[in-house]
Amino acid sequence: MIKSSLLSSIIRTLSGIGHRVTSRIWRLGASARLFYLTIIYSGESFRRFHLTLREIYATGVMSLLIMIVSAFFVGMVLALQGYNILQKYGSSDAIGVFVSLTLVRELGPVITALLFAGRAGTAITAEIGLMKTTEQLSAMEMMAVNPIARVIAPRFWAGVISMPILASLFSMVGILGGYLVAVPLIGVDDGAFWSQMQANVDVRLDIVNGLIKSVVFGVVCTMIALFQGFDAPPTAEGVSRATTRTVVISSLAVLGIDFVLTAFMLAV
Amino acid sequence: MERTTIDLWVGIFVALGVAALLGLAMKVGNLTSSKIGETYSVIAAYENIGSLKRHAPVKSAGVVVGRVADIRFDSTRYEAVVMLDIDKHYSFPTDTFANIYTSGLLGEQYVGLEAGGDEVVLKNGDKIAKTQDAVVLEKMISQFLFSKASEVETKPVSAENSSAAEAANATNSPSTELGAAPF
Image (cartoon, rainbow over all chains, first blue to last red; front, side, top):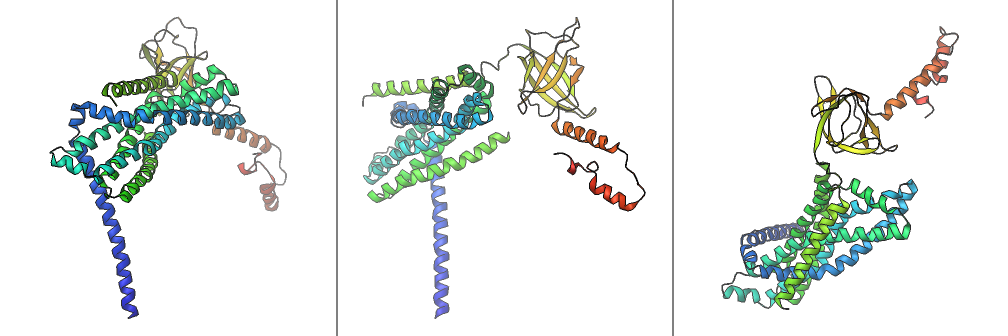
């Protein structure tokens, strides 16, 4: 009796694990399939480019304010913290290098991606989830309109186009914020700030690598948001859960991929 | 929202992005300063280049006149062969010294050119004969230690044949082991 109940509980645990693993793999496969279909059907989002433009407006332009404000503060904080450390070693002139390298290499792409996931990714998930709940996607299919070509692909390309633009804006505004704190406020020499920066920031190794990162993050964040919306259970609770998952998975994915990309870029 | 308004905003957005990227490349990066225009390349061989890297500056009297284009290892002569790209505007005599210096105490390494007095100037593909290796800190420290050790060694030690004295000598004398050095 005890033996059989123990056995059945073991079987239940194992099948629970199995169910979780298979459902994870199923979702991974489904998202890969959605990604493939998005690429296949993305011709229309360039032929009818106003569809993509509308989404660039929704994801990119509407994210400008939060990006610029947070970039400004991040740059100012970096300058304050950097000065505090660097002046201990008598090299406070290197503050320009510190701020610019940190922003261009890491913080620009990463914080942009995290903010993007919070500001634009959630909007995408909620919108598509609600479209699915109200059966707009099914209605499109009934009218022989491919919802992936009409709804998913323009949003995907809008995210991929917006992210590098936002990231480079973030870096630039952050450096301006750092400049404002370092030069007028702290009193670091103006010439040393820019010249040390120019001597140590490489266009290929730092700026282009940062751009590559932001493009990858754009693909990842947008695709996660789209899949979560597309895959959300058609209920109010399902959409809300999908929106939360978008932020969580996007943030984790961005940080993890950032490590991998950085390891590759520094190794080369 | 009307389509033209959206177009305008997206246009502003993209223009801002391009401006930021150009600003990063020009104002922050070294796209303008690293461009040296027309160059000619010369070769210099070193026994040890320390941590000299590609794209390191080549300076003369503190002014950047070129970049290190390439670093290779010559497996027949066991030397490091360094290719230097020097700006066409500057010409140097053939007996110029090409030394490897360090900027600051722990800074990056660069090639310093010290002009000689020859009439003939270096041309593309020439080899600089007079070079000086990078200063390797470990070598300097070990040289210092050995010179210190030999100073102590020269002091006369009596009763060398006694094994007890030898043992005492081994424990007391600071000269025999590097571990007892003043570091």
